[in-house]
Length: 243
Image 1: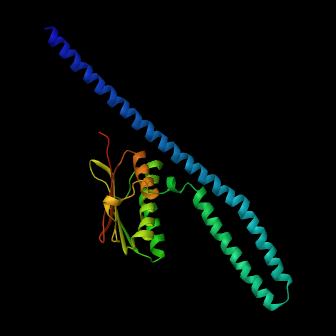
Image 2: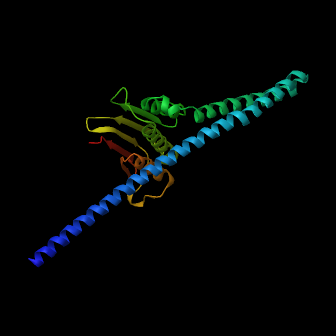
Image 3: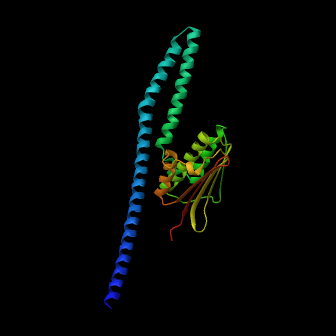
């Protein structure tokens, strides 16, 4: 009986130890997600601050320069000089317009205000306007109720994949699908038909891949990236509904 009691004690001890380690692991995962989410919020606040500085400081200086150039154009009577001044004026005005557009993108709460479908479609349209490759986007819902973090994760991962594909894969087509189902909150699939790479030689600490992985970890989504040489690269991220 003594031996049996010892065995029961050892078994219970091991079970308690296993439960304790599991509990520690869960707490670490939660802490890591909270840390990543905090970093994301800080990043967003920093971008908004940069946007305000661009608008209030540099934007005002460019506006002042534009007024000076317009005054020079009005006062100068030499046609050849006027032509050059006008060219400078056009460059300044275009730069000012680009700066205002960038500032608006950084300061506006664009992600909170728009649906995820709209955000991704805008990214697709912007990419297609450069005519470097054809990007298609499909989804099986009209509206998906997501908070800021989820929408930000989906948008940034999509942007990262598109940029990497255009820069490195020599692809002609990129397909994006975002779907939902009874047990799945959302499922993102992105695929290109580029040159691909050898999975065995993948650099796991590459900035692009690390960024995508980290963003998926923020919300506890399953992340999978596969690539085959001369076939292309496919990304699959799925977030199941909490039961």
